[in-house]
Image (cartoon, rainbow, N blue to C red; front, top):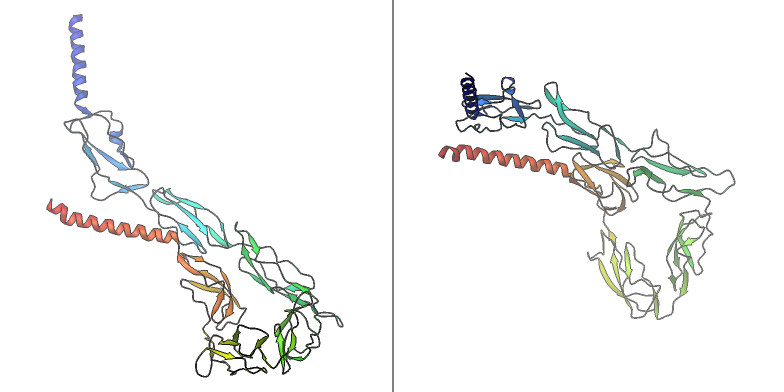
Length: 435
């Protein structure tokens, strides 16, 4: 009896082992999906069993792709193509005065933010595409790029500046001196009259330079022996006053003909002198709207110089350069003069993909300045603030706006996707049909 029971047990074990050997084990896990609930509790799957998958949260079905696998007679599961794809968040949007850096919009991707020069980020520096309400959405909002603030501009003695409600990036203030009391010498503004708010390497707001000073500057009345003033007649010479001289006939000017009153109460260059000419010498030829090369105070008989006209100027015959010779007794072989046409009026800086945000005019005079910024998606290369120096030229040079690196990356991704889809279409239409 015992022997019979033992035989039955052995037979049952053998049948179970045979049955187990005729079954598939649990299918490999799929990253983007899981077995439907009916199959998730099973540990063995007989030959011919078909299981179904469902996409995990954050993923969705790819139309036309099967979600079943079958246990084959070789006890392996049938192959299966990717049938779920990550859901996509909508683009987070444009950031005013800043940049949105995102290369992918699928579930799990990250968008980071940064601001243009002169702006500071308030809010999230990055957000993620996460599961929300059976779909996907960003887990935060767009931040804000606000202009970097500066401290109030420094005060100056005997002067004041134009006030503003707040002082932020690109704000300009202009200084002026107080009026002197009756009977006292007037104050002169020494230095650049305007300063503007900019940023340092750490994006902290700073003023671009020191403020000017209001000082009493008085230069002595310049006198020229054997010569006279051509311009700059005044009863008192203050900071910035200029005087132009010329010598009497038979004398040559040694030094500069124009001098300026400096902040240390002296003239620069120093007051020139008039030297008497000998019969075998000449003074420098007088030329309007041009220059003399080489320029000296005295030339000997037989020496030659070149006279060159300034830009937009020419001699009556249309030339711009001529050579003349000293003939002694302060006489030159000829006395040409340059006539000038109108200077081109279009001096406005040309900025592709950018604009002037401060200081824009229809016509610019020397000393005028403008502030430039690029359109969204472009980065400024060069100085944001430039000054007009005449003849259609700016200092520093007019900056340029180049396409931002993240825009270029997005374009490359789009091109790559288009090329891939075209290649896939050609494959499906021609190669797979022939196969």
